[in-house]
Image 1 (cartoon, rainbow, N blue to C red):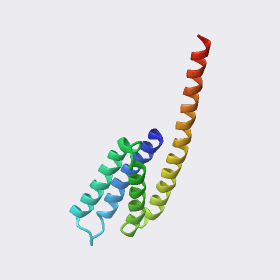
Image 2: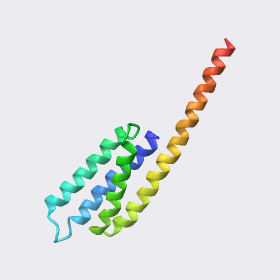
Image 3: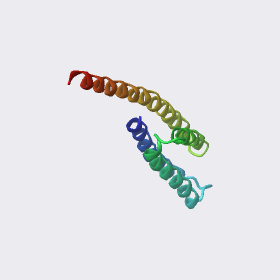
Amino acid sequence: MRTLCSSTLIGEFLVIGFAGLVAMKDPDLEVGTVWTVCGVAMALSLLLCGMVTRPGGVQLGWALQIALIASGFVVPMMFVMGAMFAALWWASVHFGRKVDEAKARFAALAEQGEGSGG
């Protein structure tokens, strides 16, 4: 799960940075505010790469997905990008857990085979 979720989060890191560049062009927004918000979101996406397997990591990832979708109120294209990344996040968590379960079953079978074949 960690690899799939981290890949999604790294992609989000880049998209958040590009969204910051677009938001910076809005004359109603302060550049400092844009980069503070984007910087916090980018830092969170990187920190979550190491936290996805810890308690609350997936939930924080969902919070980031909601924030990414909500950023569409500032940069309208982020509604689409946020929804796409939310779908990717769901797939990463869902299929990542299935891969982890399969790895655990395979390791258990391999351990059983070593124990009885000696």
